[in-house]
Amino acid sequence: MKIALLGYGKMGKTIEKIAIDRGHEIVLKVTDDIESKDLSQVDVAIDFSVPSAAFKNITACFKQQVPVICGTTGWLEQYDEAVELCKTQKAAFLYASNFSIGVNLFFDLNQKLAKLMAPFKDYEIEIEEVHHTQKLDAPSGTAITLAQQVIANSSKENWKLDTAAENEIPIYAKRVDDVPGTHTISYKSEIDSIEITHTAHSRAGFALGAVIAAEWIKDKKGVFSMKEVLSGLS
Ligand SMILES: NC(=O)c1ccc[n+]([C@@H]2O[C@H](COP(=O)([O-])OP(=O)(O)OC[C@H]3O[C@@H](n4cnc5c(N)ncnc54)[C@H](O)[C@@H]3O)[C@@H](O)[C@H]2O)c1
Ligand SMILES: O=C(O)C1=N[C@H](C(=O)O)CCC1
Image 1 (cartoon, protein in one colour):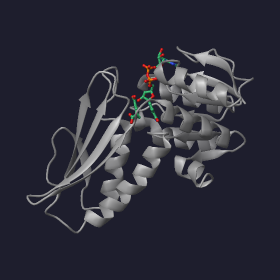
Image 2 (image 1 turned 90 degrees about the vertical axis):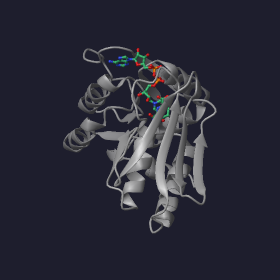
Image 3 (image 1 turned 30 degrees about the vertical axis):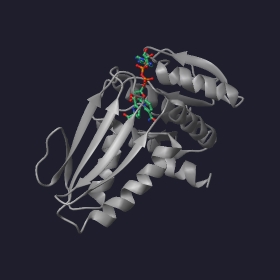
Image 4 (image 1 turned 180 degrees about the horizontal axis):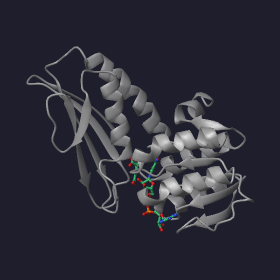
């Protein structure tokens, strides 16, 4: 498969290694404005760039009919618009806040725990995410997904960074040296606490998941999620 990497930083470089190991070829690397780039030789584009570039990169792929996998976080206010454009242009698009298989299992666990805990109002919920100091967005996309899952399965109505009212989930974002990504959901009462944590030991899991998603989307049209990719693997 011929892959374009949109963004060639920490993730772009990790994806390159894994893609080559799996027999793919990197035919284009984009590190600035995509405007004049020719994608005609590209089978799938993988975007791990910056929040300010993601929407433009994705819609350029739609225009040139190149399926696009997007892992960039921090641009979600334009997600619904991207979905509509993908549909009208009959393109292919998959965004995930986290491509690691472990985190996608953790998402299922989070949903189940939220349902279990919903009747027990003595427990206060909070989410903590820890990432490296170069991260541009806070809270992490993964923490937002985790919060959205709890909201869908409890009486909480919203999430907020650092502080929260009664009906909100606080998300605490910490930035520490080279941490690839750690997420914890805690339920605390006077009597006890229940916590679940996912700890990434490197970026390999994110990159492998993105390459698997690229292999999966290659000849498809539509808007997809990691759930659909992983259901084919289990
Ligand atoms: N979904 C996931 O599983 C997952 C995992 C890790 C990181 N991320 C996200 O991926 C993104 C990239 O992370 P990173 O650690 O590689 O960041 P990084 O800062 O190391 O790399 C970003 C790269 O994007 C490039 N860039 C800047 N403007 C660009 C443009 N207009 N077009 C294309 N590239 C451009 C920069 O030159 C840089 O090389 C972040 O949003 C991060 O949150 C997502
Ligand atoms: O390193 C990052 O940046 C990460 N971003 C994603 C997020 O915002 O959730 C996934 C974890 C790593």
